[in-house]
Length: 194
Image (tube, rainbow, N blue to C red; front, side):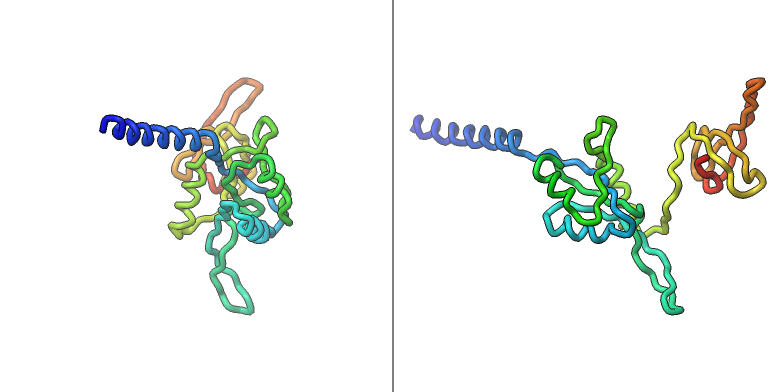
C-alpha cells in the first residue's frame, strides 16, 4: 500500500513537472505588432492573415457616407493604412506574414526588430471600438512638441505644447533673444504639428 501511494504521488509530480517543462519550453511568446499596408488594403491583408491563422485586429469606426444621394453608415479603419497582429513573429511565421499581398511591412522598434505594442494600448482601442462612441482620428501630439494653431484668434501662431488635459493644451510662446515666454490655454483640436 505504501508503494502504491508513492506511485500515485510520483506520477502526479512527474505530470506536473512535464507540464511545466512543456509550458516553458514550447509556449509561444506573443505580442501585438502594427502592420503597415498599401492604401486601402487593410481588409485585403486582414482576410489573408485571418485565413492563415493569425490573430488580427483591424479597428474600425462607423462613419456616414453618401451613396447615390442616400446617407449610409459604413465602417472605416480607425487608423487608415494600419492593422494589428498578435503573434510571436519569428522564423517561418514572420516570413509567411510578409507574403501577404497589400502589406508594406511590420513597423519596427528602435533595434530594427518588429516593434511590440503593449496589450493595454490594444485593449483601450478594442474598448473604444466596442463602445460605439463617436470617435475620429486625431493628430498625435506630445507634450513638448512644436505646434501651429490653425483656427481661432491665434491662427498661424506656433509654439510648444507643454500640457494637455481634457482637450485643452497649454501653448508656450517664447522670445528666444531675451529668454522670455508666455503661456496660453488653447483647444487641442485647433493645434497641428508644426
